[in-house]
Length: 288
Image 1 (tube, one colour):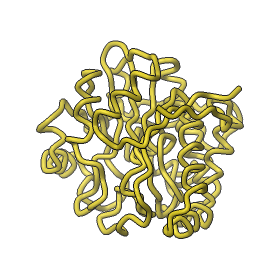
Image 2 (cartoon, one colour):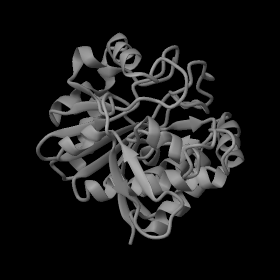
Image 3 (cartoon, helix red, strand yellow):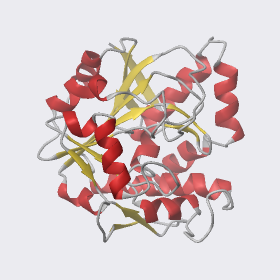
Image 4 (spheres, one colour):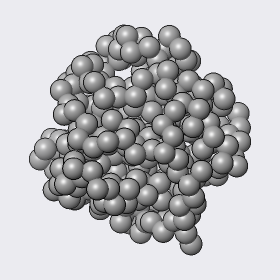
């Protein structure tokens, strides 16, 4: 069954709220807002002010987890400092969900490479989840959007190692089976969707379209013009719709972006997530 994805070419902060309203969902209780807060030195991440109207509308708390690679976010002390430097903890309540252990263990249903997903333990303190994705490329995943925020984004440091290791945290980031890594992202995302079933929403901004992620301290500048903002209750459908916008583009930078997606076999995450049954690659696009 096709899911609904809303789209607007308006890239304003107010448009985020209009798209949320179009979803006809009211996220209840304590709302976790998962977004990418940006690695130190990254020039492309979407800044706190852009998200202010939507975060204030849902009375949300910005949530993050520590990274599993060297940088300014791999320890709690450094990460909290950067959240302040980037302005997140100045404007909003923030929660570094794996600042202290133990991790929250979420089982992966069905046949899978990833038997369990380790997420920041504070995720259990929230009633609803709003995922605000900056859709862009990625050095390993090819592209990232809602599914990546649900998986790597919500995973603790140890959880990230397991996903990157295709289920084995002892395997290095660049040594694991690559297809296995992509599939493990889809499997990890499924556990967070299950946890918040019916209580999560997804908004993705196709802005600052670099082939590199906001996790890169040194990232390529955007290679494509901004496209717009999309929203859905289906994380697979919204990622598929974003990918389709890239492929349909006549922008001169399209080829570079597509090469990044395809050379990293990025579309496998959509295939595997759809196979697992928690989202659909079929969607109806409604422009507002």
